[in-house]
Length: 234
Image 1 (cartoon, rainbow, N blue to C red):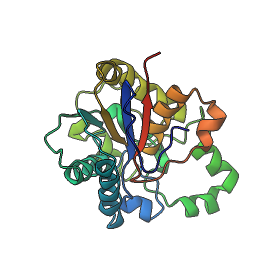
Image 2 (image 1 turned 180 degrees about the vertical axis):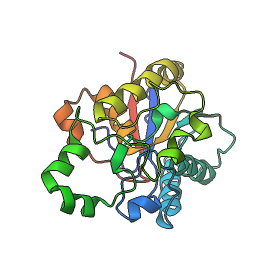
Image 3 (image 1 turned 135 degrees about the vertical axis):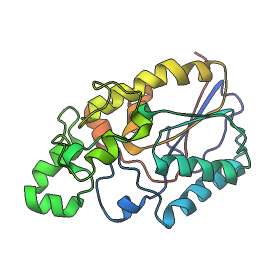
């Protein structure tokens, strides 16, 4: 199984990849849909990231390059991990394509309150359906301008800036970046770390493990725990 809470590098491995979901965010703590809002880490988040970094250090990982999203919680997690392993000098590439799923109109809503209002079944469809997106974020949404006019996304076209996304949409944009930018680094036998979000990371896992859409919808990644994938040349 690819999942290793305490990763161990394999001496024979030709290719090495480490994935880590950001530590707990303030909106995770409040049980809110975080989406593309730049929620920072909760008080527990940096500790989770620090422990994840320590696990990598104890396992003897020497990283070569890192990738993350443009969202604060993932970036801060990466900083904390690199500090813990004393490799803060490593090159870091940030991209919106590794962002969390855009939850549209659900952004900032409390998950339990939303389920009480719309029903557990409907919210499960919005949260877990592979190809059915949640309601779009409309211009009157409290965080519409906060996200749509953010300088981080100034270079995105209207087609690239989503108002909502299904899991399928999120995976597609993450894999576009994966194939173009990350795979070449791995092929050069560089040890790669990706610090990102539950849904963008699930897309990478689905691709590498050949998981069905039903299986990936049920996969939950733990915050702040590194996951290693080491494999030999075939």
